[in-house]
Length: 249
Image (cartoon, rainbow, N blue to C red):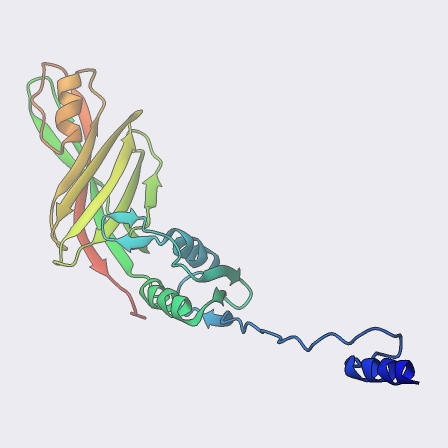
């Protein structure tokens, strides 16, 4: 009797653990930690710039300057991607809000109205005789319209007066213009890069049909060459004016 009572007391001292329907002890509740992503997507519609080109510039952080294009450090940290939508001319930007704000600041500097430029020029023909005398003839007074930092060309065909002029204007902040390009004529080509006033009478370059290297070099520099006892012809490209026409109708 005493042994039975002792066994009953021992059983009651053992803690009873409830079991599940399948006979297993339930697992203690686990805390669930959720991470809320700060990544967002914004659509920026461009007014003037081309979306695919702007996206490329942003990826390289390219900034257009009067003397050309310089590359920067690329996209800021926190940007996951930039997709160009050519149909709506928009940029779809994904990343954290601070990084997107930095990219939108860059877009403001790229999404600007292109500066349209009207270039007026003259092509002059100088005919030199063996004695050094020369006469001048106006071959053409062409005018072309292009964009700032964008190359344009113009030319005419004709006996002895065929030429092709190539010019790229760069509008400077001080009101001057940097012009670069070349002139093709008489089977020769000369190149130039000059900084001039907006209205000028500057001879940019010339092309001579002389076999003399000294004469061709002088003509290419826009100078009147010294005759070498033989006749020759020079076609000169003269800049008359460079006028910004942005926003005009």
